[in-house]
Amino acid sequence: MTPADSEQCNEHDGAGVSARKAGYLHDLSDKFSTGFLSDTSIVTMDDETLFQSLTSVKGIGPWSVHMFMIFSLHRPDVLPVGDLGVRKGVQSLYGLKELPKPLQMEQICEKWRPFRSVGS
Image 1: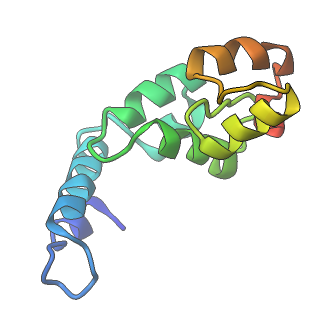
Image 2: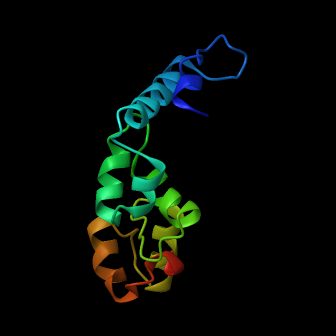
């Protein structure tokens, strides 16, 4: 999909895109049209900059960015602290009574660096 294509998205176009999701697509396409994001910049940004840039797009949250970084960009050191499956895995692996919170996940999994994506 190109930025021009997103202009044609609406909930009545038969593509099954709701008005809300069409708005998200418009925001994403605007970020590309203005140069805030580009294919090259997404690949070359450091993890933190990429995370901040992508979560500034309406409709893209931390979990989506983490999954994109792990599975599409193959970044080796991403820890999706909000992912329920990963949290349950850490709980089981370390024998925790409760699901670890994001800060606790960061602390526990620090030793996994620089390959936290693999551990995830």
